[in-house]
Image (cartoon, rainbow over all chains, first blue to last red):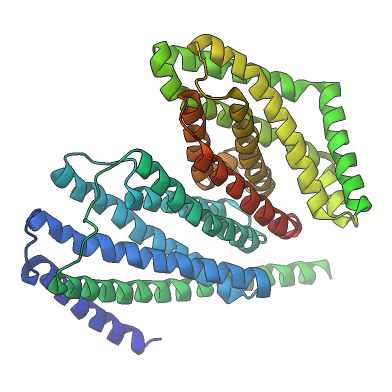
Length: 231
Length: 224
């Protein structure tokens, strides 16, 4: 890790810088919304990255429940943490975009924003469970919660979609086709965000496994001490 | 399949009998529910026509709080005297315990709802424009959705610090689609529109989550 991480870090920084330039300067200006639309290049890739990370969390949780591999538990933790960060970005950029475009900060029936909010709530509750439960049972309990949370996602989409058909709401971003140059910038930003997310996850994974090793060493040490003093 | 059903029945009857003898939980929950209805009646003071639009939401939020209060204390009895540990080492299947707990919670919450509903009707002059029996179906489906997840998460939060606050933190996000469905179904029935899609959503939610909780409960119960 010591050699590859800095190289990948530098490459990702260059990629992010280039993507930033493309999004804010080089991409064509949208005809109805103007420059405000450029937030789209942060809003959408963050959402895709967050959903990918939550999917990884779901798979890792199932793997943990089936195989009880400790690495699966660390992957689940890491992907949930980074996923929540990206989800927060989506929820912050969403209203910032909505306000100048629609005139309101939030529309209760907007399917994308509302379902992202519910997803964010589910994963924050997941992180709270991990924080509040004692270390022996945390992986199992958290994995069970992740599975139930993932089962909930289709219901969230469908219920908000059906709610929206009864209470029509403005749709952000439109459903129509996208200019190919804009698509190119969008995908570039997604690639940059994914690389960044991968690096953060990797370093967090290292941190967490080292922390667990240290905790285990401490526990062994205190066990040895007890045995030594008992004799 | 008589053995698991017998265990379920025995556990359920034990819970109901204990509750009937002491009546401490049901009394506190009843008073809490009454307080919630009164506070809501002061906070939201609509006309009779408006009240049909918002009553669905009000009623279900009140039921949700009452359900959380009920759920929080049903597992507490099992922790004292290590009853839960005794259950874990016995050969009884974990699912029997789960179903029994869920059913006893359902009965408690249903009793609370049955007592809160006339108060709501009184305070808000509610009259349903749609068939009232459908409201009963929505009540049953919605309560089961809250109770089945609530029983599961209450069992989970037994192992955490801040046990009582963990239950709503875990329950509310996952229940959001069900709460939306319950509220919209109730409002649609009260205003005379059809609620078929929302009820179908509730049925499928109940099926999926009952199955999920049954499959995962043994893992959660034995997690160590």
